[in-house]
View 1 (cartoon, rainbow, N blue to C red):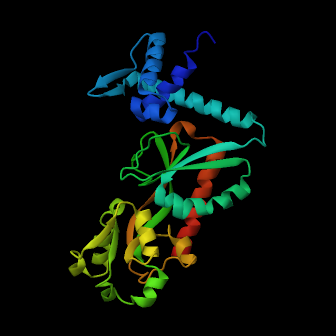
View 2: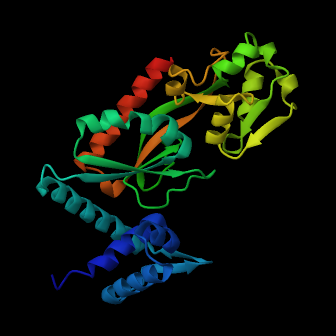
View 3: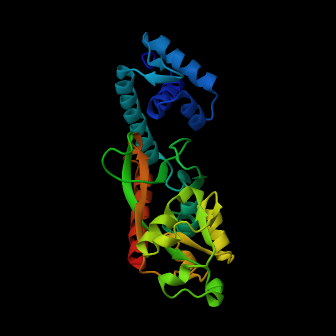
Length: 302
């Protein structure tokens, strides 16, 4: 053991190198920025060389530190696999999932009961992000984000496609009883509800519907889609919503799709797993379940 570097400092170093930021590492680990800096300095003193260099206001890992961090991450992953294999079979395991707010509320959480039914000893803790960028910050085992699962779009993470996404017109059934929409031209004169987090939805849908003359029509703008969705359900107007994410709302009669054949394809959702976490059985089972649920939802919305 005398030949091992300080393990706490090693853990902090791995997170700082992986996230590319002392601030992000501090956020993920629940430490202060100063504590991260002290742990890194301790490890640098033990190794006898610098691991980070300053670039502007950021501390960036040196090339040798990047290689070292990858080896450390793989070692931690092996320890995690061994701990899971040796743990008590009936002990509850925590799985931390980070997801966009609307995705978590309208798609993931309503389905978690099915996952728990087959995985009684796994507790899923969902944290949400509602920013436009949806940064990969904070502690999580799996992050769900909108994006592509190929082309190196997510360095340091393995991306698994989960759910396709396309936009269509949505309204509440009660609203449509008094303001029916049977053909695209019927959209004119309705209050158009839009979301700051889904900019361009109305523009693309109106063009797909052959209604470019309505592009300048005023819209009621809300900051996030989950607020817009609630306004649509409350009958304030009509909106553009994603399927199959809203399929549960439609099946329950809370929302309706008056022109379902007019669709605009969007970039879907992927599950992101830190590369050092690959091989953990509990995590692999959850990813497989997400992909199966996404396939089932897509077949239902087809």
